[in-house]
Structures are given as C-alpha cells and as structure tokens.
Image (cartoon, rainbow, N blue to C red; front, side, top):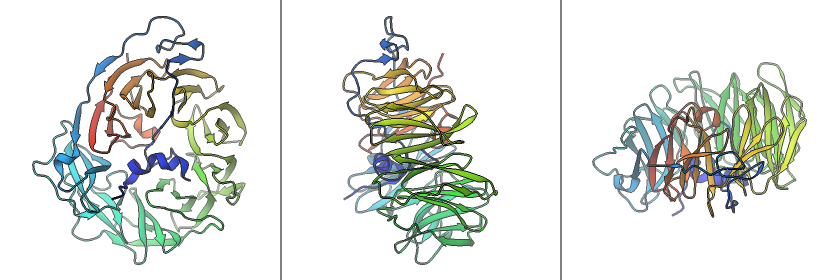
Length: 456
C-alpha cells in the first residue's frame, strides 16, 4: 500500500515538484544533500570543524534523545507509518497510518513520550489534510467534502463535521482568529473557500490559470493568511486572494514564494509555464513586485537584515539571491544539488555537496562548511531559539554553532532524523522560537524529541 502523509511524505518531492520548499508550510524540508565532502572545511581552506582553518577539533558531546517511541507499539494494524505530528501544550499528537488505508491520532505526553496504554485502531481515512496549529481548542482536519474538529489531547473526532461544501474534495485547511480557509478541487478545477469562525461559508472561488495543469495536488498545498490576504500554493499554482471577498489578487504557475511584504518570486520547472505578471496590487491597495527568476528547483522568500530577499536554487546548479524590493540580482554561486534550509540576519544556511554551509547574505561569501564525516548526508537544518542549528543527518542529529560551524553535540542514530517538526511551527521563522525539535524517523516508524542545549 502506498503511504502518503502531509509534510513527511511530500517534503523531498516538493523541491522536484512545483511547490516552494520553504514557506509557511504544510511541508517540512528534506535536505537530501548527496555526496558531501568527507572533511569539514571553511572558506579559508581545510578546516577542523571549529570554524577556523587551523587547530585541533574539539570532540562533540555525545547526547541522547529526550525520548524516542516506536509508533507501532501504540496502534493496531500492519505496517505502521508515522505521517504527521501536531502539538497542543502538554500533548504531541501523531497521525499514524496502518492496516488497510486507515489512520489514527496517537497522543504522546510531550515531556515523557508516554503514549496510550492500549493500542488504538486506525478508523480514520488515510488521505487527511490538517491545519498546522490548534485553533480555538481544536485541530481542524479535512477529508472528502468536509472539515472536522479533532481533540488535540485525545485525537478524537467531533461528532459532526464542522463545515462542508458539496462537490469539493478538500486538500488543505488553515485557521486564524477570524477565518478558516480551505483549498481543494471541484472536479479538475482548484477552489478556495473561506468560512467564518462558526463554520458558515463566506465565499468560494474557482482559480484557473490558463496553460497550468494541476497534477497530483494531494499533499502539495500551503495556505498562509497575512494582513487580509490568503497566500496559497496548490501543486503548480501559486496565488493570493483577498480574504474579504475571495478576489484573486495574483496568480502564477511554477515554483514560487511570497515575501512577508507580498512580493512574489516565480520560477519555472519545465520552461513552458505561462509567464507571470510583472506586478500586482495587494488587498491593501499597494503595488507589489513580481520577480520572474527563470528556471528554478526551489524558491525561498524571506525578510532579514532590514530587507526582503528571494533565494533561488536553479537547475544550472547555482544559488542566486535577489533583492525583493528591486528585483536585482545581489549575487550568485555555483551550488550543485542544493537546498536552502534556513536563514538568520546574516546568513543563508544551505545544503549541497559540501554538506551544510553558511553563506553571507551581504556578499555571497561562504563563511563555513560542515560535512560531519565520510559518507554523511545532511537532511535538514533548523535554527533554534538559543541552541543554534539543529541538523538532521544520515548519522543522527548534531548541534552546530551558526557563527562558526563548530559541532557542539551529537545524538547518534542513523534512523533518527528523517523529517523535523516543532510545536511552534515548521517554517524557519517559527522554529527559531523554540529549542525543542521533534523528528519523524527515516523509516517513518519512530517519533523522537530532541532538546537542544543552550550554546555557550
């Protein structure tokens, strides 16, 4: 049976497909950096893994996960497969697929990892699409034509659907204080609908882009609500709507991302996608720039250092950085098989053949590169609140100093870190508000908690 599930199943495919890899996401990132170098290096030459080009490396502290659980111990059915994780206070809620196309929510104590005393039966659908965060005391999940409430402490489903819309197959849902936005398909046409906090439909709009097919939209949906706008990705579609009335503000085809201020960077994957507009007007009446960045495998848009930027990985094996205010190219670097993971006020952190590297936002200079050892692949990198970079690899999880690239600690387990999750969220801005990172194992059978120790 094919296993599919939210960000965990779609993360690596999202880069090859037509969804930006790092935005307010229903997707987690999978670095997947093949063939990293076998030595730790810095911009200055051969290095010691401490951020300097000379000296003797200090051994990293060997630590253990705070807790790790085999999800198969808590469900009935064959081939248990951990799909998604959600958090609400003292409980981590794991969605596990098992048996014949069924799934179940398994609650774990966030502090201890303790789970239910009796295995749970998978009675919910396998294809289910949930909001990232708990809303008004409930988790909202959509399947078929309805949106349902889930008790975040127990995983139990509400007695009746919270809202529904006949003829629509829902593929994503997002909730804020004022509105719930759901995205799906009506036949072959994408549709977006807004509901009030009471579940009453406010408006519904079909969104069609000529020459842009919607291929395999399942688990390729992202919804972000910002300043009265809904910014949405659905397969190859990237568009924004006015949340007041559903008016489509801009629509583009390809791999794309919005900056926080609303500038849109659009790349092409196949080269025959319809060209994006040069600009658009936002819900607040301001003009917004649309950047056509050409062929791309990943587009990341973000704010840092008092400005807004768009980082692009392209199929010519280059990393490019654009000023989102002007559309001008700031710098570009050769970057084989790379993926931007996160950023801070000074640097981009990207995986590639060199492992994980820090690149100066200002100059494009490679500040350090960390490969971690022979044959090691870096999968993810999360910038935490006070624990520095927490890096998932094919050998385990490591903690790095973001300034020097020095490895401070390591949890050794090659199956530990397939995909990351944090209770604060999975977008880079959210992850840096916590030092607690959860990991779905590389084989989707384990859930682990890592508490990153404070650097220094």
